[in-house]
Length: 416
Picture 1: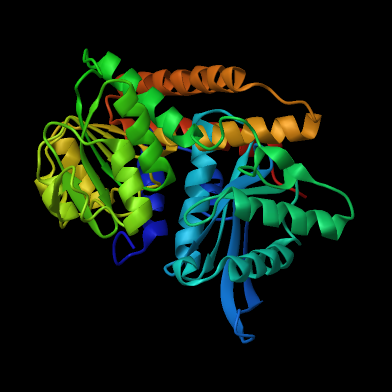
Picture 2: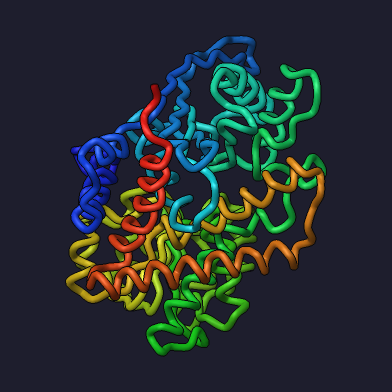
């Protein structure tokens, strides 16, 4: 967790900072501090040896004033209700920032997927889907992939829900394979959106992407694709890190070679294209752009003083604690908060959902053009608020997202 107080308390502190500018009516503010629905389920799953293990699963629907709840499902040993609630809250503000008609949700199962077989994960996924089926649906709550889940996980979820309904329901999840209703461009959407916001930030600061030194923390789906796109656009990827270590090369790392090494070795350590080191040692090396793209709280009070960079773009959700965020402000680091920078995934998830409902699909060029339009607009709107209110980009993004959600809450009123 980011700190002893808990991840959700960190998010509520950001909400409080936004409300200092918005000055919402007390009842509306209290409404936005409270999740609408939290479901905890027991998930029994048969293991390959015939035994049955019981896992704990969660689905939190934080708000749906602007539309159906939307959010990923993660499998990780650290999953708990506090984390899932915080992530559902962040999804709510994120959808507001990019102005798509979704509320926020999140789900997860406390398990270690790295120690489970494919068949065990399939049984776990199908049972988890069954257990949360009482609150999910294409018009109420649409899951998506997250940490240690992928398009195969979503295909299992879609199939399970469809079998329960008696007909195919592709719009129940997003991030699924294209062959069963997935969208072109979805796999790289989070990273594409992040790169769009980085390019806009560089333009705002009067800088060029060419030869910018980039360090990426986290080498999963988001981290790898962000590094690869930036590399192909002319940036110099000087540092890469995963959960077990980091590599650095001042002249630049070959992102594809590093990816091949990781697939073969299971980790970045030992990659001969750079010098091996710890993640904290990598943080201490000067860069131009830092992309934290793993779990929350990876940049905190323990390591933030080491950081020397111009731009931080959050590929993960809240990878920087509030304590560390204050230090980066003092260092005049231009920060692109996750509810803006990594919103490309939910934007293209929205496109996928719309396509599934229509049974009509767009080509990848159309998808990418629509994504660029939304992400560019969102960046400019957040920057305008930051300049108008003389505040940082994180607070400005929260102001924008919270304002849009609070407007919807006030417009709909209280029932009954």
